[in-house]
Image (cartoon, rainbow, N blue to C red):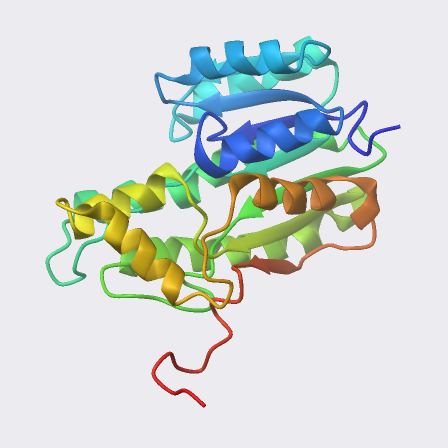
Length: 265
């Protein structure tokens, strides 16, 4: 029996990047999934996943996670369709590089409203259904940015991702009596559209040079793959991690290990 067989997972931001990697790995392990995403690519992604995983039940819901009432309706629809909800992956998030001193309230709130409030909205809507299960798992996507490291221009993003750490730990304490586990993944640089966007913002004429420059500073000399992150999420979502809650798991190719990149031996 595959480790997620019989499980139903909601994955936010599952139409691309890390979320899509997680969706594919979950499906490979036998899960049925519902993807919440606002991107116009959602329908085509759902069609492709259904073609690749014909035995799985796969649903897509076009939703802005800032819209609390719409989230409540979508979660209710998932439970009606699948009969239960066992796993929630809070993956949806945004990042825009901008100086703290010049950042507008609109850009600040864009990060806070999606990365924090959106995650809050989905989790709050899902928990009542999870309480009906014998066991459930919440996997929150934080980042090494904020809890561990930061670069210029990342104040809004880093603040929200640090907040997700506190959110994840506090949830673990509140929900432990209901056999609902809550853990966080802290990715370093994974090759996603978000990271590619950072490359374009930093050097519109040669974004690949930015990606290559990032890779040089990582001990493994490469960026992570979305499927590698998906494998970690699948472990935390499965019964294999049944004695783990309230913890953080870094997946960064060793990028946060060096004390400095300028000292050699």
